[in-house]
Amino acid sequence: MITTGLDDPKASAPAPATGALELRDITAAYGRTTVLRDVSVSVGRGVVQALLGPNGAGKTTLLRTAAGLMRPSSGSIWLGGEDVTKQPAFERAHGGVCLVPEGRGIFRRLSVRDNLTLQIPPWAPRGTGMDRALEAFPILKQRLGQIAGTMSGGEQQILAVARCYVSSPSVVLLDEVSMGLAPRIVDQIFESLMRLVSEGISILLVEQYVNRALEMASTVYLLNRGEIAFSGPASDLDEATVMRGYLGADLGSGEGVATEASAEPMVGPAHPNTASGHDKVAPE
Ligand code: ATP
Image 1 (spheres, rainbow, N blue to C red):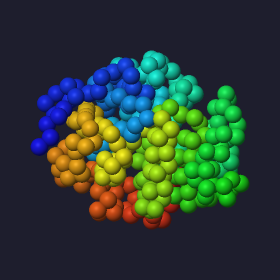
Image 2 (image 1 turned 180 degrees about the horizontal axis):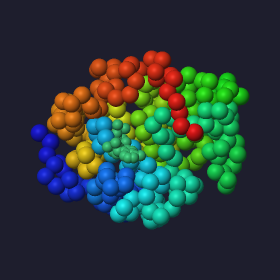
Image 3 (image 1 turned 60 degrees about the horizontal axis):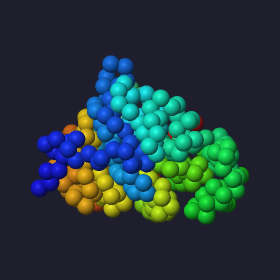
């Protein structure tokens, strides 16, 4: 039985200071509703860390707070050792944070080329990032002139992830990138993510497929009702433990995190690669 972090979640929290991204004692609220309570997460350099939890646990809120889209009511955020708590999102993006939000977050009315070009930071050499993105995702080479919103859901998600190659990030925040996608596309996206990691880029991954997340991640944070219920090495966990031991109460209510054995996420579109997945509207 795994006990790490259950008695005192903070006891197993990674030590601060050296991570690529650190959220320290973050409390965040929507109006009067507090969604994150004293949450600390540290993302090491060049590793994948998974953030798992049932629906409504606060995962998206945590990523949005890390990206500067939401200001915490207390706590601090550190990027590469610098306190960026008060920096707006665009400055954090310039500083190396790349968020791939749930629902893709591409500009659907712009071409693939324009979506990629817009991500190139002012100081970066123009060709390099674009070349890397097209090398990682050759399908996009044939689609450069295509309006992004006319591509399939899988291709749009590939574009959303490809934007991370172009923006020269130090930290990539991914919010359920596999949602509604065919396993073949998910494989392709996750392979490309591991390539980013091999280049020293850090990844904080919110993922519905627990087994995939455990395979990729070195460390796992389990968030439940806005609090860290567990943090520790991914090797200390298996899918069943996560599902039953930590998320069981919520799974009983029909919500939670999916297994790939079921081949269907418990949240989101009814089945990967269905029309509902492809038709999902991406925010602009
Ligand atoms: P899911 O897996 O369903 O995406 P999550 O773990 O990402 O869930 P969040 O989306 O961060 O959770 O939501 C956490 C809580 O905050 C939920 O109770 C949600 O209803 C609430 N919430 C999220 N966004 C808003 C908002 N804009 N205004 C008010 N409450 C919100």
